[in-house]
Length: 127
Image (cartoon, rainbow, N blue to C red; front, side, top):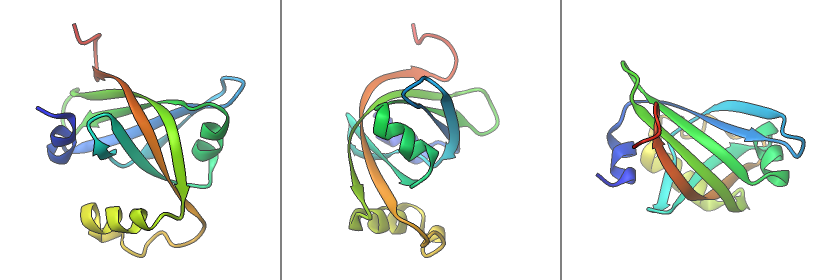
């Protein structure tokens, strides 16, 4: 199954972990990745700690846990670029999450693109 199809169907929640230039780690709840293609994902971020960390350290891990059991995925990702207040943010939200339309208007939003470096199961090495 393609990874994009997995995330379209799986129910659960995700955490995006980043670190600053000194290695101090932060973790925040994030929605599912938006697949631009099978090697590129994007997340929508506010101008907060996750975004600040990604300015100085492009590496991150997204951990997704499926609802009800210990299944899921770990995505090891590297930032490629970002777009501030991209019109694509509104389009993505409206298409995938119509219930959040208009809820998060304050402050700038960033559409951050990542290369998908490695995918592992939630638990184990995947071997």
